Length: 413
Image (cartoon, rainbow, N blue to C red):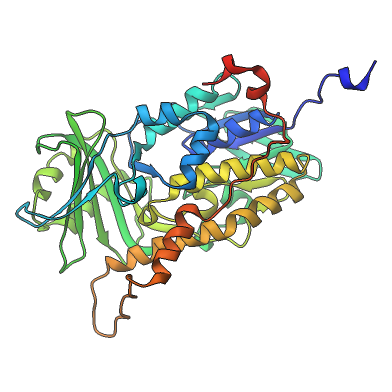
């Protein structure tokens, strides 16, 4: 038989932990490059709602290369801009989604986390195996593969494992050590949940910030005009509330935003009947390396830049593209592929983490001996913004296999 007519060798088996954004995004690219992909998610189903997330600069190109630009834009929140307001609701400053070519404070691609996750899931669920309501309980790797025991009892072997399971990644703790050594608390706490839109909210986000305490409250429109997303930030030098203890989190929120003013009391009135409450520390993940043997991390599990950067989704989407591309380009050799992934992503990640740290500092209340804020009008800051939004050149990977291109136009989403 002519070797040119031989069937292609089957690609590696890859297990991805996490089905939010980074997980399905890397599953998309791994499958297109020829891998056999399984995604395991501990939640029983896709989690709806969540915070509004943005795509700017090079992240838009990553979406376009997935063939999902139209689907993502169709699910966007259609937010026209943002108003900064005082305690009486008077507008102090206005931002538009058209600012900076759609890459400003309000990006022209803004979508609820759950809606983006659904777009990515719908795009991949035919070719990719999804396992909901389960998780990795044990993992043992050797030079040739990774043995995984699932909490549900199944035992399987994979060539590679990728952790895309978020800020408090169980897989990271399992493979790299206790999460505490990688988390960097930025001194702020974020809470958000959906509420009935009893506030006359249309297409503009509203933000009130109390300059004396640094606390802020926000209301933002979502694609359901009858509801809105409420958000709070408040300072907390120490944070010791379990991220799974919802009752304690709600008690903390009530305590810390008491007396904030504006519409806060009306927003808090819906705290006990919301279906999607979230509260956690604003934190980054800082690691010297994002891989160990045949296991690699992606998205917040590897390099959370915190919500203060506004770039977590962009990092996940771009990282997914680069990780899958570099693995395939290296012939699926984890040592070479993971090393190239880290080398290409590191500067882009660090710029976005610096943006997150700077934005967190702007919410601090100055006290005696406080270090003054830097001059944000300087050229250094514009250069940093440029690196955070477009600080990586996406490789073309034209020489790599592409299952969708090979299938022809009918297979395109």
